[in-house]
Length: 328
Ligand code: T6T
Image 1: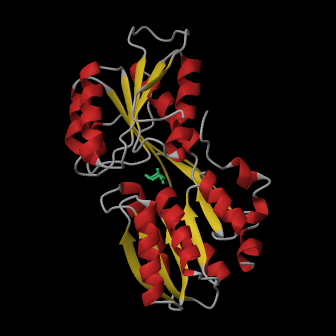
Image 2: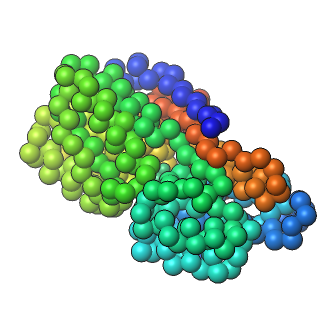
């Protein structure tokens, strides 16, 4: 396994002490280049959900690398992060027989069979971001160090609240490999530190309004919560709204992902730190591995990408550079 893990946390301690390209419709990018001996130059990208800046940034990386290597990309994503909506998209992609499929499965179990069928049809399947229970059919898997990111999120809360207290996690749904791993990294670290009281995880179904309500109710029950870890973009957006609505001032929110709304919440001071992934790199690595498999070159079975902790302190430098794109 190649590990491209890069963890940059410049300025974290100081800052914490203070405190489309994509729609449901397929979009196609083409290139006039050529590569290899195979005539089929079509790569399909199926996002976890359309309109999510994490996947839009990944799409930008995929399109750029595909163009360089002489491939055409068609991107589609379900309107919700939901396997019942993603499965028909995958089934129709399989029927259209692209050379390769880059896909972020929305559930470890429900997407197993449809993706296995894609691979059985001769399509080179690369899992980008999320995975399934048995990924052995995939030529490669590329994702962030999600357990490490969850642990880093706990450390960020601890840096802001060194005397400890109650901490809560807001996630999307159980069965999503990435966010489950982030919860685990956070939970293990929180439970290992006796000055913190881990209140557990609540699920927002990837809906910011639900996340906001969960946070409001949690703060009514436990007004002394000192930290919230929101495991992805929409959980973080909703958690920030919930904290704002509750008027809670002395609370640290650390969110995974760095879309424009998260950056704004950081600038406003509602959120104190963001764990930014490298979705563009996941995309370019994904295309490289797919093309390696298609051209008979050696493939890396597993690639782990790193993350950057963004705070107000590094926003004008490497933090700002790690922010996600809304368009390519
Ligand atoms: O956090 C990313 C992604 O890694 C996760 O699998 C699902 O949520 C995001 O797309 C952000 O919304």
